[in-house]
Image 1 (cartoon, rainbow, N blue to C red):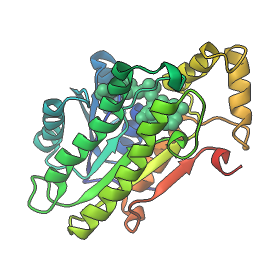
Image 2 (image 1 turned 135 degrees about the vertical axis):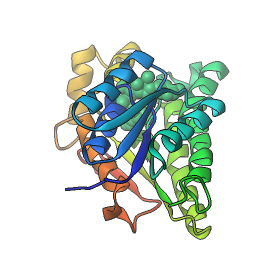
Image 3 (image 1 turned 90 degrees about the vertical axis):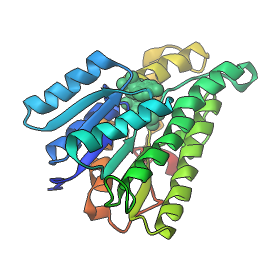
Length: 266
Ligand SMILES: NC(=O)c1ccc[n+]([C@@H]2O[C@H](COP(=O)([O-])OP(=O)(O)OC[C@H]3O[C@@H](n4cnc5c(N)ncnc54)[C@H](O)[C@@H]3O)[C@@H](O)[C@H]2O)c1
């Protein structure tokens, strides 16, 4: 069993999908968890479910594209739970469009969450986690990239650019924090298609682009693109986050963990 007793975690985009499952898993392993999301009601519900199950959790309204809200989010962990050992940069948005039709506004909107938000998160987490910071014990930063950060997919140019950026930000941060002696590990997770609202939106968006006949055709063909023949569940990703959050992965930093039913190796 992975034991996170005594650790404090912060999870972005924790009101639903993968983020909610990660928050639950970390809390059930003993971590005290701050959940952030732009969706207040749903975020509060997830935090309450965790408390009802005996865990410790606090929800904070947090838009990851806003630096002031990042400061408040990190302070919520420090003030409520007395530290910060784990940050999961999970919040992300998806956008599907052929490159010939993209707009500057859409590009900026996506990058502000998927890239700028993750960068600013590193800034404020590291200030707290590094030696001399308010938490000061080092820790683990876990970044949600995607198989779209590893291979190309039609219609996902902007999203892929953002997830490729997260992949290499992870490696740059791993080397920087390692060399600076901060004791902070940084790793990325790369899921294939996971059954969440975003996963469902992706299927429908592919249909709108004319890539599949209808939603069921998209699902069948996307499933078949994963050689194991199944799509992922949020718990498949939460289990990886648990491992990366724990001391079992103490020698891993800058790594990319792929969970995609062998999609990217076939
Ligand atoms: N579902 C998939 O197939 C899949 C595959 C690969 C990678 N991912 C990545 O995993 C992460 C989670 O995906 P998901 O499928 O759970 O998505 P989701 O859309 O189901 O949930 C995302 C959550 O993030 C929140 N969010 C959106 N913008 C935010 C912002 N600016 N600040 C704070 N919270 C915000 C949403 O309110 C929502 O609760 C994302 O980074 C996504 O890109 C998902």
